[in-house]
Length: 96
Image (cartoon, rainbow, N blue to C red):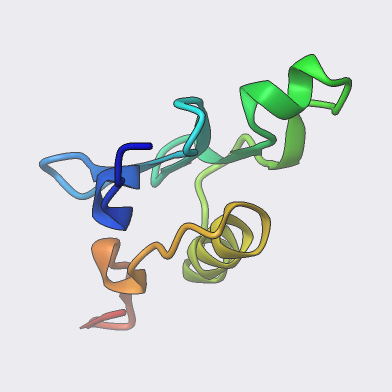
């Protein structure tokens, strides 16, 4: 079996407004967008076995707390460590 670098499981857009997480089966299991919110899904393999697609989805601009929720969900459900510093939020003149 080919080794997969955990860093290969996370992609970030050049403007740091969107992050994607990919499971070992090749399916995209997470998308965090500063515009569109959170999509946290089961893997395609799990869905083929009868699992529902959505674990936690929102459809509105997210907050910093939502970002932390996304990072936790990817770790909890898929073992994917998403660096919390990939996305920043402005709050009262400072960057979070």
